[in-house]
Length: 421
Ligand code: GAL
Image (cartoon, rainbow, N blue to C red; front, side, top):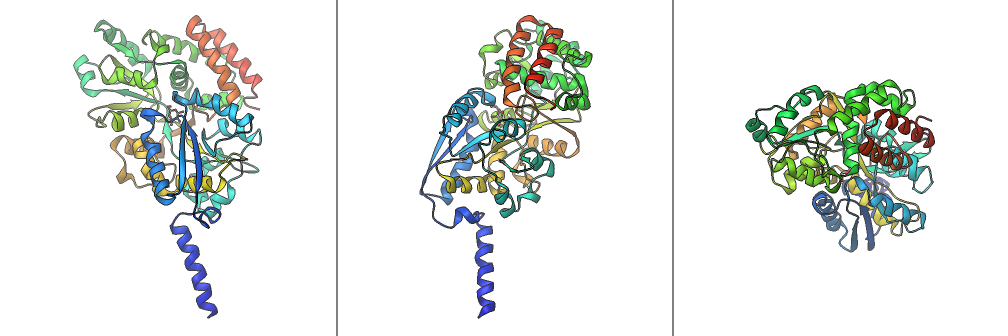
């Protein structure tokens, strides 16, 4: 009798685990609302929708409110989120980058719930790479659930167009400077660029090429100053690269810059691999033939990464519904439904690569062997305070092209925002 009871208990526990439900969330049938806040609107939406569909399958009675604020890299969403968080009206769960965007902002302000219990319950301490868990954790807790790994330093092109123009994807910026004038003569924009944040995005790839991974890391640990000769050199190279970009950049979205490459108006675009998601999921182009990719010039063998994650803000109106949402995000099933559409790879170490396209397979292979560094433009290396100020430094540089002044200004905002402290 006793044995049967014990066995039955184990069976229930095992069933709970198999269904992927957290102890706290699966005890009762969930109802009410779940508001998910992100910047994955429009073209960026299909991968998120796949997760919402899975969630609805398990929790038919929950009304999911998909609250999006459009604008790549969260330029607009983060401002709205800040108002809501500070006004005591947090969404149930919100998108936030793993790293300083999470830790240096919302964790520091004590606005998040510790999710260590969920990580333990779901076996995630072993399912995610240790380095990633470190990035979303502090001494006192683990603060979000990662849904992906994106690569920031990718150069996109259309193979048939490069062939037509008689050029190859540049391995270094010098290679690029050698072919860029030829492209210009043909009426082709050498490098497509979009609004301000995409300049930050390009900057980090150029800076990585100029500094190398060690000095890139040194900027964020505080052991190399932005106004050091190395730091200023990165701005100089960036200024040279900008000479080969389109004049209307500031009015374009990142998708419109990708479109320039797809339509043959531009040769290259340095963008994160959500561009692979856009080109394969929305534009239905085949990776390899419809679009091609290479590490951005001078960064071969280096993988500049970022990870989107979702957390549980303190005071979330529908806590149980959020726990079920987070449980799905961290699961293998959720991850392998989301990432093949998104252009990213799974943050889990056990993903089913058969579900991914050739681009993602190559990204996954690179992630396994490259030198890994964190992205600035997407929240890994610096807090929101620095990022906001950096946007102003970038504005100034785009107008003045003064590398020494930009290095100096960047050093000032690093000190102000406690970078390397
Ligand atoms: C990044 C985000 C990606 C993608 C991109 C463009 O910050 O991590 O998932 O959404 O912005 O909006």
